Length: 293
Image (cartoon, rainbow, N blue to C red; front, side, top):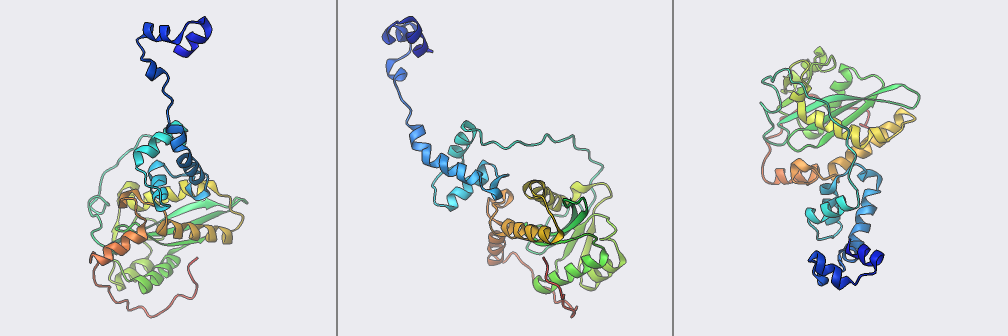
C-alpha cells in the first residue's frame, strides 16, 4: 500500500511511512524465503505430478521427501502447500447414518496382533466397454497389509475359497475373518472351509458397512487413488494395474494410521517385537494351480 501511494502521489517513502507508523526497515525488507524454498518447491511439484502421488496430501508428501533425503517438517511443507495451492479437491461427504453397532464391529472387536483378524469385501469397476468387473480385496486389519486382490467378471463362493486356501498355505490362518453378509461370504462352501481351517467368522450387522471399517477404508483408498483415475480396456490390464498398485500400497505408500510407515515395514517390526501368534497348521493339501494376479 505504501509503495502504491509513493508511486501515485509522488510523496517520499520516508513521509508516507511516518504517517502510517511503518518502520522503513520493515518497508524495505526483502524476504529470503522464496529463494530459500525454491529447490524445495520444485521437489514438491515433482512429487505431486507423479501419477502414484496424485491423491497424496502434504503429510504423505512430507514422508516421501524425507525418504529422498530432505530434512523438513510437515509445518514447512504445509506452508508451501497452502501458498502454492497444492491442495487436493475433495468431494463433499454426505451425512452419515448409523443403524446400530453389533458385537462383531471393528471397534467392538479390534485386532490385537498380526494375523489376528482379516477382513474381505468386493469392489466393482467397469471396463471401457461397460462390462462390470468385481475385485475381491483381503487385508490384515492389524498391519493394514493387502494380502490379495482377485479380479474377475463373476466371483462366487468357490472363488473366495480358492483365494483363502492359497493365503492360508503361504501365510497361515488368521484367528478371525470379518465380512458382511454377502452371498459369497455366507455360502456353505466358504463356511465349511473356514470351519475346517479353524478360522472363526465375524459377520457384521446387515446394512452397517461401518462395522467393517478397515476394509471399507481400504476400498475407498483404492477407489480414490486408483480406480477413479484409470480406464481399463480389458480384464488382463485391470489385473496387472491393480496388482501393481497393491504392491505399491504395501511396500511404498505411507499409512497415516501406522505413523506414516508402509504396511510391510510395520508388519516386519511387529514380527520382530513378537506381536504374533503361532501359525496354525493347515490340513488342506490341495495347492492352488493359478497364481494370484
